[in-house]
Amino acid sequence: MSLSIHIDIETCTRCRKCVRICPAEIFIQETPKSDVETQHISSCIHCGHCVGVCPTSSIVHSDFPAEKIHPIHPEKFPTSEQLLLLIKSRRSNRAFSAKPVPAEKLDLILEAAHRAPTGTNAQNVSFTLVTDPEKIQQVIGFTIDIFMELGKKLSNPFLKPILKLIVPDAYAYLPHLEALRRKYEMGQDPILRKATALLLIHTPKKSQLGCQDANLAYQNGSLMAESLGISQFYTGFLCIAMQQDKKNRIPNFLGIEGKVHAGMGLGVPSIHFENYIDRKEIDVRKL
Ligand SMILES: Cc1cc2nc3c(=O)[nH]c(=O)nc-3n(C[C@H](O)[C@H](O)[C@H](O)COP(=O)(O)O)c2cc1C
Image (cartoon, rainbow, N blue to C red):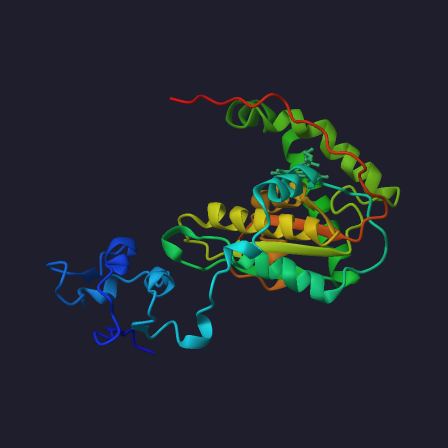
């Protein structure tokens, strides 16, 4: 559908809110009494700020028909104290039960993640939600394989002198890689911690701010999970394995075309935190 933006000058109150809010400067008004007009609408980033601020619904934007516009009721927001309490109480609880996460809770976590802002409002963050236990096992198996291959490479006596120069930090991980394999062979799950759902967050490969976009989505999703009583943790090992794997085994196996930037292991908690704990002192400079 081609983009169109019209202003109903009959109902427009000339309040200039659209002129002031639009990041692409599409709305112009020459004098306070003159009609608001549009210019270079092709530079619209489809953020919907114009229809969001208009008090008289006078902006008709082809992307935002009436059913996509919803009134905001600030009195229904959680208070800042409630929000901060949720943020403080969110932990990476890896003590999962075997119960599956109810589908409606997963959908709310997805919706919250999808609502996160994206650079230039690109909105090209995609999600792959894996709940099939066999697929989850495969992902864990691939991750261990990738780490074992990495360990072999790092230990190779011919490559070691060069790799120590190029990736000195990787050698700090070498003992951990071996420990992961041992735990895996003993039937433990050091990668996904027996999570019953895995949410991978990805963007097209060339997306410039894809990593930032995906991780903002992650954090929205994780707070929603906490509010629903669902546990989550960031699957950093899995992300590192995917970064290292030239064969792209995990995304290929799951049919993901883009680049995975973040992963969330999810499950119903088997134990709950009674207390939240203070972080280190904040390191902040106020200039
Ligand atoms: C980027 C990142 C990667 C992480 N990777 C893992 C991981 O692979 N496995 C794991 O069990 N926890 C992982 N975590 C969870 C951290 O260990 C956890 O956030 C940290 O210990 C603080 O605990 P909290 O989340 O309960 O506040 C990761 C967290 C972040 C932010």
